[in-house]
Amino acid sequence: MRVNEFLDLVARETQKQLPARWRNFHAWKRYTLIQLFYARRAIHYEVWVRGGNLRALEIGLHCEADAATNTRCLQLFDAQLFEIKHALGSQLEAEQWTKSWTRVHELVPYKTLDENAARECATRLARMIQFFEPLLIAHGAYDQSVAPRAAATRLRKSRAAAKSR
Image (cartoon, rainbow, N blue to C red):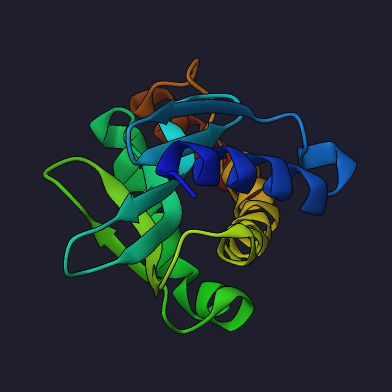
């Protein structure tokens, strides 16, 4: 199976495996990778077919937004790392990938790109989406209207209000 066909199948299979609430993602595909995303393309789930000697699928959540958002996401991943690994497997790694981008990902070796590999990849991806989307939403990762300074002010005010009760 060609990489392009494989990635299309991964997207279709992922959509089938998700509950209705998470099926309406957007997809963007280029060469050997596909990104599935909801509110912001800069925060997306990615499958990257890595060839050569590695021959692995990189499956993960990438935060490629502004530095402040990416830092908040990495802090969230670090704080939840035990829960992430418990829910999704100890093979997942959370890291700052570049100077500003962050990701939680795993490498899954493959022998051939076929229907079975696509279904297994989709299963992993669907589990990630169901775990991370509620977490991202609850922690305001998609809220572009709140600048980091404004979010910090809001947090201080809510803490002050809690103390006064």
